[in-house]
Length: 258
Image 1 (cartoon, rainbow, N blue to C red):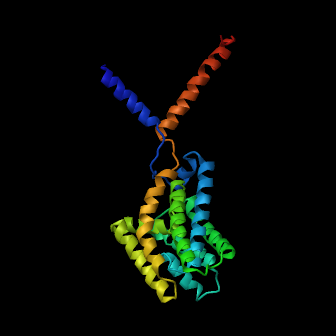
Image 2 (cartoon, rainbow, N blue to C red):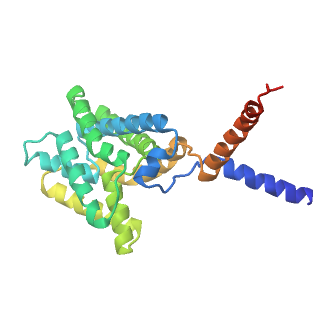
Image 3 (cartoon, rainbow, N blue to C red):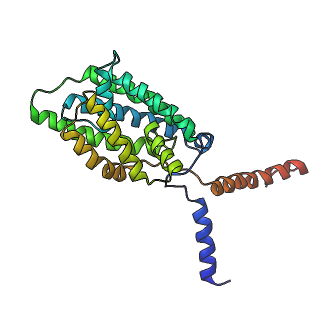
């Protein structure tokens, strides 16, 4: 075999042993078995906490909210629930819509539905509305940036999408529509409904719509947790078996390893 052929073979072997740096398509059980679970759980909950903090920052800036939070704030005007409680209730309601779409939630999906609302209410309890417009604008910019980082973190943990993300992808799969069309349709609908209910629409709404996609794309590669491929896990198991074989043979022969 030529040196080129040997190099290609080595490259192929190296490739199978390289951890998966891209987002994997995994079922709920596969997500838990994929490896590096403690690291991924920590990243998931840090990301969800930051996401909830960013929502509290948006609310306190009072310069406009993202479409879903326009709906959430609108619902607080007509229910006795706090903002965070509405976020949780809406997340659970959206999660129920997964059933007819045959979507399966992961651990991260359920945590997303609950923990973000808890973190948002905690933030609102600690953070007051600034009086100065410049401070409110800075708070808005900070909220968008924190939200982008948080999105990259919880998605990169690879423990399941959020309820609203899963609704979008599930509808796209069932209808055959593009992700862009489904997402736009959902967000326009919830934005209009939230505005009719008294939710806050403004500069922040436009800024979020324009910035969150590029920011999530920017931060996601930094937070995607590398997962071993099935081939690399099999190779590792085989190596461990080979390493154990000599010691076993010596024992069976009654001798000592030399």
